[in-house]
Structures are given as C-alpha cells and as structure tokens.
Image (cartoon, rainbow, N blue to C red; front, side):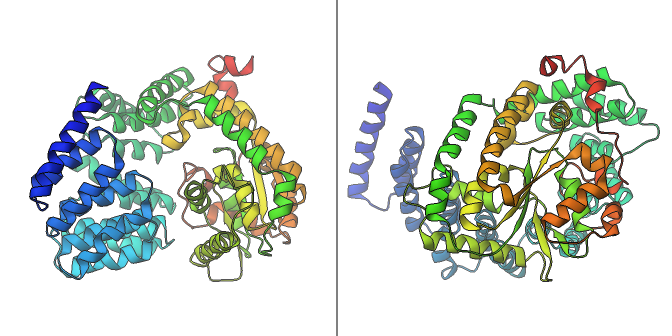
Length: 528
C-alpha cells in the first residue's frame, strides 16, 4: 500500500513538471518506469507515446512502445507504431525493426518487403536481415529454397555467422539431408566448441555407429560453466537419445529427468486445475444446441490431423502426403493463434458474429493457397488443434478431423524424452503428461459425440502394424482411393519441422511400439 502511494505521489510530481514543460523527455522516461513498476498500463502507454512524439528520431522509443503492445497481446498494434515514422525517415534500422514487428504480427510478406528495404538502404550487419528473411520463408511461407538462398547470402557476408550456420543446419535437417545438416552443425562446433545446441543437434542427427565421442562431448558440455541453461537442456535430451540408442536405458532416463527438471524451471509448472477447468469450459460452451444454432454455412472441407503430440501425427501426414492428391501443410499455427486472439475458449452465447467467421474462413483459405496452388487436399497437422475443434467446426462445419492416438505409456515416454516449450509445460513431468492426456481424451470424446461422421480415429500401433488397411480407411474418409506411394513415404523430400524429422525418413518399422517396456521400472507410477 505504501509503495503504491509512493508511485501515486511520484506521478503527481512528474505531471507538475510536464505541465510546465510537456516536452520534457526525462520526465516522460521516468513516467514510463513508474508505469511499468506499478503495472499501470495506461500510464506506461501514454508516456511511451509521448516519448515517440517528443523524439521520433530516437528509434528506441518506438521499439519500446511496439514491444509494450506485443507484451500486452496486442500484436497487430505493434508494427503500427512505425508507420508514421516511415514518411519522416529513410533509415535502414527503422525498416528493420518495422519488419521485425510485422513478422510478430503474422504480416510475413510485408515483413519481407521491409527487411529487403533495410538491406537496400545499407543496413549495417545485413546478414541478420537475411537470416530473418530466411526464417520467414522456411517457417511461414513454405519456401525452403528461398530460405536457403538468404542463409547463403548471410554467410557470404559473414562466413562465421553462427546463427546462419545453425539455421542452415536446421533447414537441411527439416529437408531430410542428414549429412549436410551434420556438416553445418560441425562447422559451428569448430568455431565454438562450447555451442551446446549445435552438439545436441549433431547428436540427434546421428544414427548408428560409435557415438562414444558424442556422449563424452555432451557430458562435458552439460557441466561446463560457459554453457547456458537453455543449451544444457538440449544437450541432456540429446544425451538421453544416444544412451537409448545404445540400450543404456537407465542412463537415458536419468538424462531426461535432469533435462526436464531444468526445462521446467524455464517454462514453468503445469497447472492441472487450470487445464481441467479449460476442458470443462470448452465442453459447456460448444454444446450441440449452440453449434446447431450458430453453425456457419461454409461448405469447405479442410483436413486437420490432431491429438496428442508424439502420437504418430507426423508419420500419418507423411504417408498421406505421398498420395498424389494430398499436400502436407505441417504444423500450422493459424487456429491456435486465432483462438487466442478471439478468446475462443469462451465463445459468445449469441454466437460468433458472421463477419468474424467469414474473415477467419477467408484468412485460412488464403493461408492454404500459399502452401499449394494445385487442386490437392492440404493437411493441417497441428496436434493441439484438438483443443480448437469447436472453433474449427464453427468456421468450417464440414471440416474433416483425423485424431491420432497411441498407447499411453509409449506416448508419455516419447513426450518426456523430447523438449517442448512453454505452451506444453506439462511435458516436463510424466504424471502431468498422463493427466493432460486423460483430459484431452475427455474433450476428444465430446467432439466425437458432436461430429462423429467427420472425425476419424487412427491408432499409431495399428498404423505401423497394418499400414495399408489403416491408410485405406483414412483415404476413404477423405474421399480418396488407395495409392501404393503412401507406403513409400520415407522417400518424400518435403520439409518436416517436428521432432519426428528423422523417424519419417526411414521405412516403416514397429520399433517404437511397446518401447515403454524398456523403462518399465521408471514408469511404474503410470502403470499402477
């Protein structure tokens, strides 16, 4: 209470100064600090806007205001901060930062234009702009060749640019070029032997052979003081993978335990109650009566693959993408992003406004057209779209959803042994994974009860055991005929940007079915 009074008193003094001198930059800067410390967003925003007006030539003021909007979840407002400045200044740094915030607001093509403008104006350190352009092409515009071209440009400017080498390694990895990926990660290790992330990626790309040197290297990096937590986590997950490869299951699990312990410090603890309440809310909100009353008339039939992460969705998408009438869209963030923007967990009782639904449908259709212009089905393989089926069906009532499922302990172990981010913080604890899976299954059963004719379940173990039979049923669900190329999925040279990147480059096998038995003693709590 006393501290809040101090903030109030300080603001009163600052306002007195500004009444006498409205252009006092130091007073406005102090007002920003007070606004941030007191968590008063109105004061913070007002002061930042004033600073931009007082000193538009000081780009840091605009960057701070744009970042404020980004942190507040108002992503579309962030790039708007720079627009008035573009007519006043022709400076490469202005266009670079404008492009950066455009990309955060999902205005990817506009971001490309402005990154290029910054380069044309003589941006110092233009290799970073080329790197960012490459990231847009690879992550959002499905143009790996363009991405590679700009990474090569970045490395021509600065051959020792580690970030470009790392991203080039990632791109080669996503494209299934194992040796090329390993070469890029090897170059980074030569430049910086303590670049933990590069060593981890090299380990993940290594299959078979003697890996004792890699194990020793990762073990050293994990304990080295110059390796930051974020990189140490990657090293621990990769070390577990190598131990698993050697059938040293106890050592593998210990590595993953340590990795998850540190990763949980970075991403935060999963709150089971919040997630359970969210599932309850979705089931209540998207009821049969609500959906019938406010169903949109759109006749499009987009295809979604959803379910638990690590439940076979990437394998299934690759198999389907080998069919001449199917294109893999990968893990599109469209509906998770849209759901967050419109608070789709709590739809209005009166239904979504028709103009909103139509704009979402148009934006999504435009997104798909950027992936493939041919007349093929495009799969949207974002597993956590399982949370957004109510929204998806509100926009596209005829959407077809394939839900992948997997034996629970295999699924839990697979998630636990891979790194995931803040949005999946349940992945750091086996019992949290188990809880999440149970709740997601409860929600999925609700969707099935509402949309049984347009939801199809695929069991991972059935898929690897009887691929032709399972795929024939999936293709029939999609209105397609069987094609033998679906069994040659490992030859497909498309981009795969998931943790399954190397698995789907191999012929079909059943090695992952029942893998949990190697860790029976560690998984005893899930088996009880």
